[in-house]
Amino acid sequence: MLETSQDLFYLVLAFCVLWLTVFLCWALYYMIRMLKQTNQFLEDVKQKIERVSSLFGFLKSKLFTEALKGLSHLVWKDKNKK
Image (cartoon, rainbow, N blue to C red; front, side):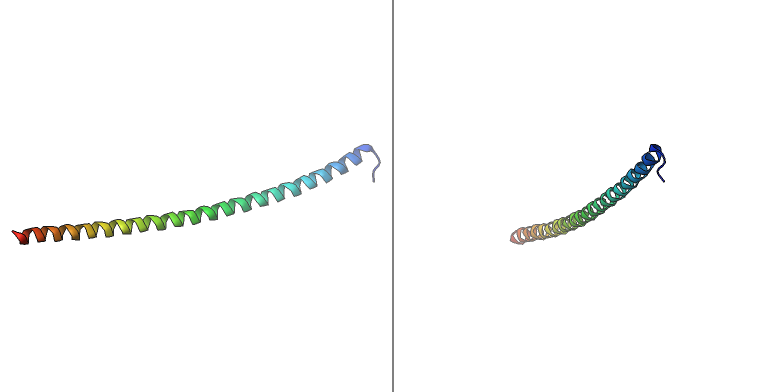
């Protein structure tokens, strides 16, 4: 099986390539997991920002409506006094 030192070198080289491949697969797996978790986190943040934005839009429209009602009451009250 091992007739020359070159045969031993090839055996060790094959073993090292095998471990390098295992390590790269493991590292790639964890990188993909981290990217997936980051993507999920960003999606959650995006949803929360959209909720806050819609809440501010609702509050803005509600405030504008109430301000118009208040102004119309002041105008009608002022006209009725004259």
